[in-house]
Length: 355
Image (tube, rainbow, N blue to C red):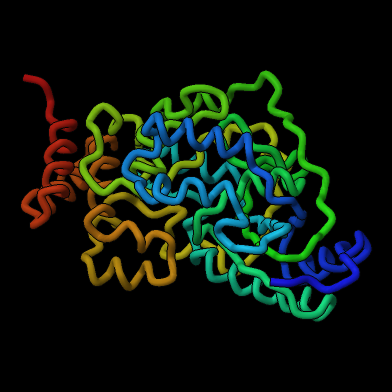
């Protein structure tokens, strides 16, 4: 890898920022590649086993904190953000309605990865038009990258007590993407922390997964349990899941900084299949072919139909006792999957009146 001479100036960086904004990104910054303290934090987290069954995190731990090991020749990283915020009222209304399904706001529409990758590629081409050929690699949650630490160092926001990135001018509802480059770009000013004494995200977590400020035990996290975890959901955590069938947003919904979140009208992020208002019963009725058809191009596809039913069965167990909910559970009581049958049996037991 090589970089053009002379080294890019801050005026050039501003032109790159302008290109990023024109491509639809809402945030932009540049960082170096030193992540020493973050590497140590990651190492302690992995050693404590808090990554659960996500073995890929342990397998690539060192590369996450060493950008030049992942992409040799990397000198600086361009971080970008793309807002996806929506009105909070509708989220709280769905969470309060036990017969409706709650899907994490980021997953209501099209999978953001392809959109981000395409825009990052266009940004790389714009940089090349400004500076000539250079070495780069684009990432959108697609490789061992400490994207929040890099984004913090690039000034996009600070890592909050819930471990999400927060911008005091726009909250936390935004996706991240990176361009690893061999350009010696002047870095942005890192973001400072503004969580203060607030502990709302810790207090509201339904499963107490935020065990201390800035320390998340993924094994208790609803996002991990409903998306990453492949086996049976621990019984002591099922009640806390409530009606959340894919991910969880409580820690972001309660964050005071999200009153500044920007509403972003990206058509790809508009809700599909009525997922913002759908009932648990109607989603539980999807057979596998319908599930695959309806989730094409959606982040939900990665859960697979079996875990989709597992998650909804738990939510139905937490739902109000109604004839429709009982009938829906009985319809899956003899499902071929042992995993589904187990969670359906648990759910039915929650609706059994004591003798």
